[in-house]
Amino acid sequence: MSKQHVPIKKNDEIDVIFEDLTHDGKGVAKVDGYPLFVAGVLPGEKAKIKVTKLNKGYGFGSLVELYEKSEFRIEPDCPIFAECGGCQLQHISYEGQLQAKEKQVRDVLGRIGKLENVKVHPVLGMKNPWHYRNKAQVPIGEREGGLVGGFYKQRSHEIIDMEACLIQQEENDEVLQKVKAICGEFGIRAYNEKSHKGTLRHIMIRSGKVTGEIMVVLITRTPDIPNRRKLVERIVSEVPGIKSVVQNVNTKRTNVIFGEQTNVLWGEEFIYDYIGDVKFAISARSFYQVNPDQTKVLYDKALEYAGLSGEETVIDAYCGIGTISLFLAQRANKVYGVEIVPEAIEDAMRNAELNGITNVEFEVGEAEKVIPQWYEQGVQADVLVVDPPRKGCDETLLETIIEMKPKKLVYVSCNPATLARDLRILEDGGYETMQVQPVDMFPHTTHVECVAKLRLKPSP
Image (cartoon, rainbow, N blue to C red; front, side, top):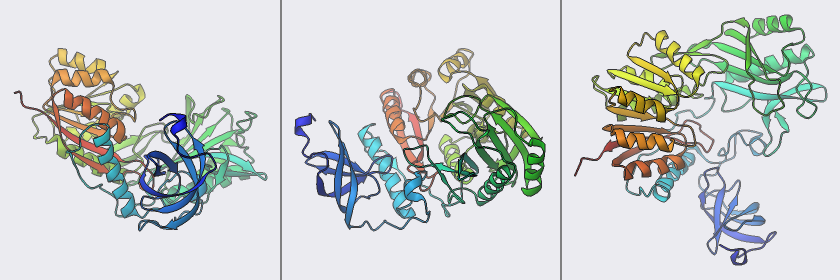
């Protein structure tokens, strides 16, 4: 759409009806076919908006007045919902959130994947969609001489101090407040990103949902922490269930949270937790799912779609710390896992040993290079599982899968758009998408995970 065909001008105030939500939770209205995105509104709502920005093909607006509300609109429970931006959907009832996520998956499968007829099941949600996160990770700042910790205000680096986050496990909030107060008492200064001075950059709390074990991680600019020994003693004496106090040192001017150097100041290097019957060792920097209850739901569905009888050879591309691999190994003859991050493979091997699981083999490398090598060595996968990052599968890996022709494919996705794109490629390469199951791993946010079941089409 060229600039002269944009049917509105900046700063216009217009009445619109919203018809959809974007992937990041903004309402979508159209004026003569021209889409406008507005935060804080829902499909079906009528409103007056002010046009704030115009691009060639779409624009943005802000809400002026709401005339008609959606049946799903509710008052957010969180007092800083409007400022924080950590949750995008707290103004929608949970039933409304699940419906919106199912629609999002259907829409992208149709629009991007041209898969209008694939069975998409209703989203598997949580009975209690609050206090589910087992990891709290907050930036630390200073205000009026005291330490503050919370989330960054939307589109800024201003920290909103918070007492509690409604999607964090409550124990994590309590520990965070204690650690922040103790650091303040010992006069530890917060890191200032403008001057690159101060000590404490972030505090991270990890907790085992099943075990109750707690790890406190202090991310600092300098290797030295003032009064370190006394500080650690106080933390250990005041935090029930604590198993580990860890320091991570990040000396760089960067918004990346972790640095390269990690030291255990007290206790163990790992805490432990379970997903189902599988035990996992979690270090300060381990990747571990933040919602273990829904992870179990997701992996049970992946296991169901794999349809294992105990005879199969399974390849798990993007295996991470071995979470899906170890679930599959309970039902498969042999599982091969590949992952590009060496530390993740170390964790995967440790987790296999921890559970006495011996029918798994892990290798560091790019899936698209390692899997063809396995294939040349005679490894024939009956089932191939992929759980890629948000950008989706590497194109070369998809070509390798199409060439190898495993009978069954299970695609675990954290991004419906790249899932739809990759399913289209696999369909064109001889696969059929049987069904897709969305899972709500992160209630009150716009994220939705999916498990897709594919089979190789019979040769004509």
